[in-house]
Length: 158
Image 1 (cartoon, rainbow, N blue to C red):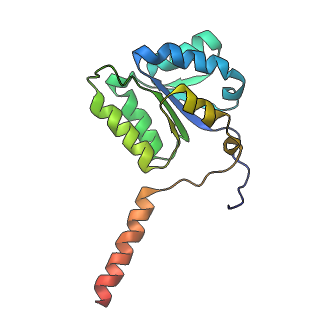
Image 2 (cartoon, one colour):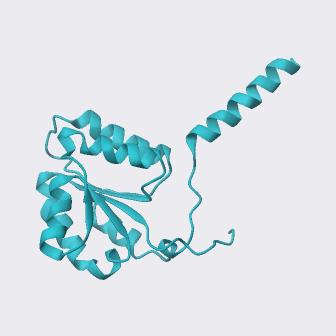
Image 3 (tube, rainbow, N blue to C red):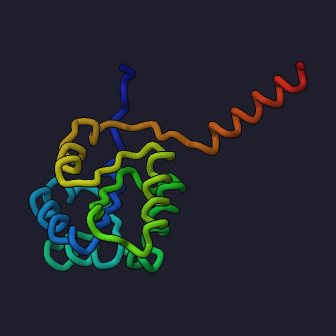
């Protein structure tokens, strides 16, 4: 296992919760209040206002998910500006912005950031000793560029 340098002060954590999961998100945030205080928090509108108003946590809020907030957070992930995503989505309810939800989860996986979709996983992530270590992000654009260069070398040689 490679040696890891100390992580920068705090992680950049995005919080998103569908309507039926907002209470879970708030309870989770309250339970982990001391741990969350050391990180920079981002969230979609209503999800972010809950811990701001009820727990006093500073949260940078984007638009509501159906109005582009999921896409705003996805763009931050793609730009390397979000380190972890906690997305409590409701698999039992239909969502008119389901394509945005899938796109958000896709970009998080492609960019290789940790994603928690339930409280148990979020507890494991926030309490992990890896939170205090540096993590090398995977840049899909850089990988694609290397692949293209290799293909070009093969084409020229062949």
